[in-house]
Picture 1 (cartoon, rainbow, N blue to C red):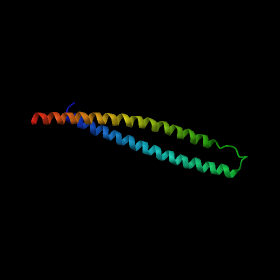
Picture 2 (spheres, rainbow, N blue to C red):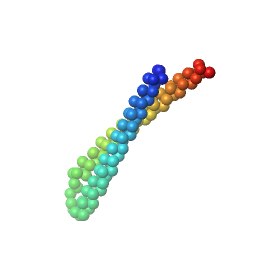
Picture 3 (tube, one colour):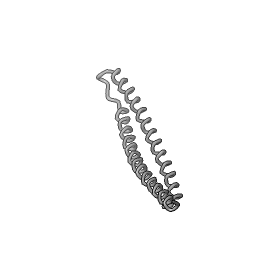
Picture 4 (cartoon, rainbow, N blue to C red):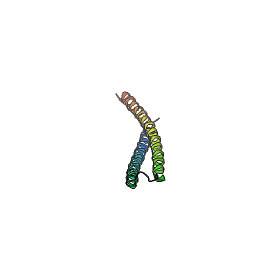
Length: 105
């Protein structure tokens, strides 16, 4: 792979890595909001007393949290893959530069 192609690849991988980090950050924020909603719902149920029925919204919030956790794991896996590829391309660029300086010297 040529130096210019490698540089373009690094730019593309860096952009993808940033996109994945942003997506993971958004998921974390959504999960925090879900945790607050779940806590609020639990407090409401406790205030209603022990004879109150369990609210189906609680189960729904747990399902949404599980879904977000799965998405987060997928993004983390993709992030790790992109990071590994980014390191690989950086090594290729370093070798190309080293080879170029050997020819000049």
